[in-house]
Length: 344
Ligand code: NCD
Ligand code: ZN
Ligand code: ZN
Image (cartoon, rainbow, N blue to C red; front, side, top):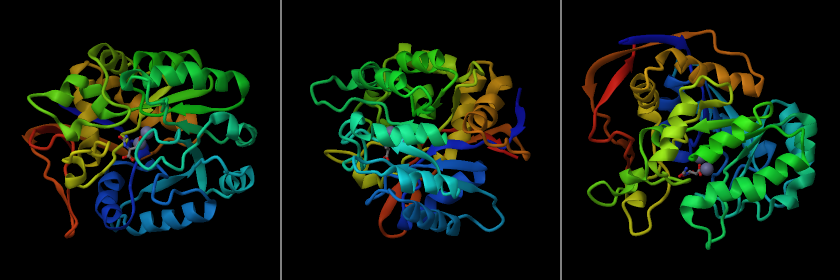
């Protein structure tokens, strides 16, 4: 199969940043996807409906002329988030969801939640108002091995939370383990999960392929092959809980190629191509539309996109780094490698 036509896909987890980077990266996501759930981990984070509304305007201003793209905004939860602004922001169509970053778990999470118990009242209000909770699911204690932090979070935080607030709908973002896929399946009536291209394409060997590979470093970190295979199985199964979320996370080259490099893989320019490679390898192209265009809207209770897109295999080409004025450049997934799928 060398061509495939599906409903226009959405990206249910993306970082668009702000300022000069935002202007350069938004066009990639906007051209490829009809909608995207935009992560709120700016500096300072997007914590109020007013901030989200202003941020949405800055994103809209960066959409190329003639392109139809809807940014869906999220609220960054902190220990002192109040329920009122969040619930009103959701009612007014500003917030689609709220994001839980355990404090210090990942990029720009220092204002995150120090303990989930502290925000139970807000989470109860979210359940009541049917606002989905999006979670970066990793424990943050330094003594927990970095490869075990997702499983630890599921056992110590997620399962108690699921039991405590039965009405809360939850997306476990960027799952990286078999345990992640399993817990989502076990709570299929109220949970979903996004899966990134890099966690489907690679395992932790890619971090050390012939030397240290900073552009393969993201959080949660790539895991061993058994987990990669479990994720490939989940994504290509067509099961309704699993949907596309690139976690495209741009950082300037010099901030990744550094003694202490930033976490995040920038996949926006080649995201669909990366997923198509996985689905083609798994002989599952017939299930790509479920993952890319149907399961996400179903979880969020949003209409599916009516527009259709066709992709076809072509002569391979290489992505080039994205220039950010005189600030530097951002290296994308597949830099120096080939991409074989293109939208027609
Ligand atoms: C993300 C970023 O850079 O904002 N980085 C990452 O490695 N995934 C944050 C996140 O999604 O955890
Ligand atoms: Zn995250
Ligand atoms: Zn992310």
